[in-house]
Structures are given as C-alpha cells and as structure tokens.
Image 1 (tube, rainbow, N blue to C red):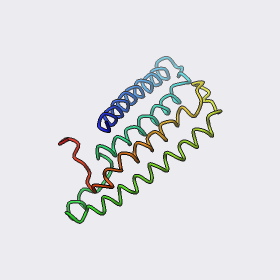
Image 2 (spheres, rainbow, N blue to C red):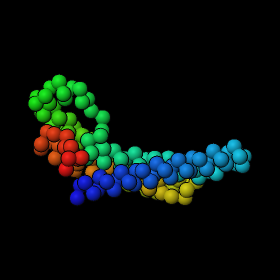
Image 3 (tube, rainbow, N blue to C red):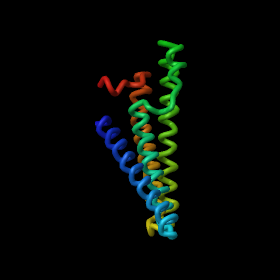
Length: 154
C-alpha cells in the first residue's frame, strides 16, 4: 500500500512540475511575445510548486532519496543503525510538526483568497499536513528497522 502511495505521489509531483513549466512558459511567451503577461500564472505556478515539492518530499522519505550522508553510513558500517533510527525519529517528528502546524495554517488562511486565482489560500497549503502525515508514516518502518529499505529490491 505504501509503495503504491509513494508511486502515486511521484506521479503527481511529475505532473505538477510539467504543469508548472508549461505555465511559466506561457507567462514568458505572454510577456515577451504578446507584451502582456497573464496575471494568474505566477500564483498558479507557486501553488503547483508547493504541491509537488511537498508530495515528492513525502515520497522521498519512503524511497530513501532524501538527503543523507551515505559516506558516513559506509564508514560506520553496522554502527550506523542507531544513527539511522535517530534520524528517522527526527524525520517522523518533523513530519508530525508539519501535519499539526500545516493543518493550523490551512485553517487560519481558509478565508483568504488568492486574488488572481479566486481560490482559498488554504488550497495552496493543503499538501503540508498531507505530506506531514505521510512523512511520519513512511519514517515509522525506518525507526523500527534502522534501515533505509532498498525499494528496488522489494
């Protein structure tokens, strides 16, 4: 189940990145060719960026492609397991912080509107608590096992 969720997050992130590139391309075309930039493009690309970065970061915790120092792990050998467990615990706590404070942020800004998109500002921040919950969930097996699971071998 977690593997399917992580794969879906990566696909959503990829589509978001492609959409953002298309929107920014339209903005540049409008500015330099049409001499009139569309007003919605900047805010739309920022909202998409928040979405795809947060969702892909959750997938990164599951896949193990988040930033870590592999050289240190190799040098420590078997002694790296408790270090990986502590790091996974820190990642889980940060995911829970993102979940709680991201949900609070969504609630606080729910009445604010992004003028150029006519959407609630909360729409931009919804991926924060979602990604936080998924980060915490994906870090849990790493806390228990102390290993970054090789997802390719599974």
